[in-house]
Image (cartoon, rainbow, N blue to C red; front, side, top):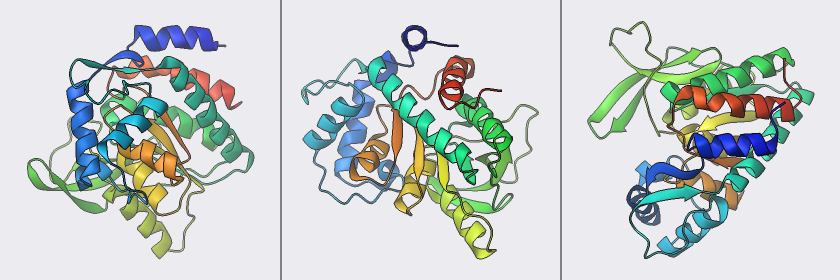
Length: 271
């Protein structure tokens, strides 16, 4: 069993929390874009409240532990490991409730190269507990605006976890999908499930647009977010997102393994 103290030490050693790789410049730029309601940073959330820059910074200081000083605009960002641990406990509680109810779940990631293993382990455990792990709209196409222009992707599932791949591109043997913040994939998946009268998820688990897009549509959503992803924390503050775990979402994939063990143990889903 991984204790909170041991996990805290791992969070700091792996730079999942403490001083993280995300720069303060990148985070503050995201906060400014959120204030301007730039869709690239809203990623599916339609804020109910007016969020000025100082409000976003104050919220991120409260939820993540970043500096609350708006004049602090350079250097590396910081995440309080205590906040990460508390959020992981709340995250595990939501998983436990879903497992107890044998609730249908949908999992998706915009960080497949880093987080696929984490979500896949949750999918395996929830499936073993009797939850239906949903895979709607597999193979469907979705057009997403990127910094390179409009790109077409295919929605795919790997071990029960949704991701997108570039369409009409030969898949390398180890390809795990594309990085995206877009809420369009989860909207596509949910719309496809509704159209055929299939099961709809009682819980959506993921990051980026998967959480924000689902939460905005009224689905319970929980996920992970970095210091430059204010939309998830705003969604949590406004009530459209249930739980957000603050951590660096782009470290080596194996660094998330202790988090997987901790969450599954706390949710009584360890196999």
